[in-house]
Picture 1: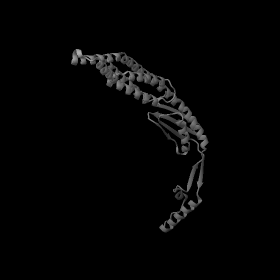
Picture 2 (picture 1 turned 180 degrees about the vertical axis):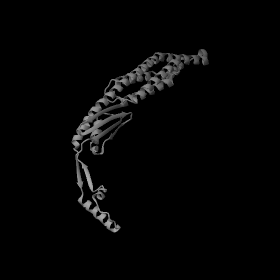
Picture 3 (picture 1 turned 120 degrees about the vertical axis):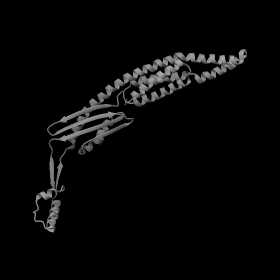
Picture 4 (picture 1 turned 180 degrees about the horizontal axis):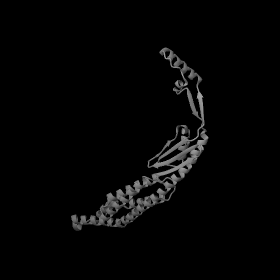
Length: 288
């Protein structure tokens, strides 16, 4: 099991290039990948997204790449047609305005289009550096997610033990609740009818109440869900959605037991189960 929060960082330094890459992730219901790259490396974004998407199932993941070029191969291009056009326009302006100032190269260099500088970059070389950084950053990032995930599992298992203990306590008290129902029905019939009690009617009414208030089915389903929860904690891969679903089902059974119960000991255990379950669900918000 992995946490949805993690951090990884890697750096590269050589005579021509300094680069750093950060990986950060946060809780999110779905997978959301954000990639921030220098403009000239935007072509690598789909591949980076594919790398992350193949390894992460849920969470918001941010990838930030910073690059500083120490040595650059540049190509300077002079557009002769543009130079001539600006030159003629400035010469005409000089004549129309009656200026005596001579036309110089400094006047032409004020126009950005006259001299164009292009950086010559081999994207394949940058790609090798970027993905080497990504691999190293991922190693630290994933290790932290594993570490936090194991801590979360330990906490959830502690809460799961509370749930199992409370369930056992409820199962032990459940027969007392049923016996209390039987006694209550017989006592009311005797109070109203005295010695003329029709035991067939008593048994019928008791059976109806037992069907209405029995919690055996809820306890059986809850035990099954707890076993499923325990097993999922030991499975690898993204288990967050499955665990959340199991918690919803357990919560439904706990609520049903609470609504049927009129025994104080059971009500106390229902409160205990609700508290443990809420603690588990809080932890699951950070599980992939």
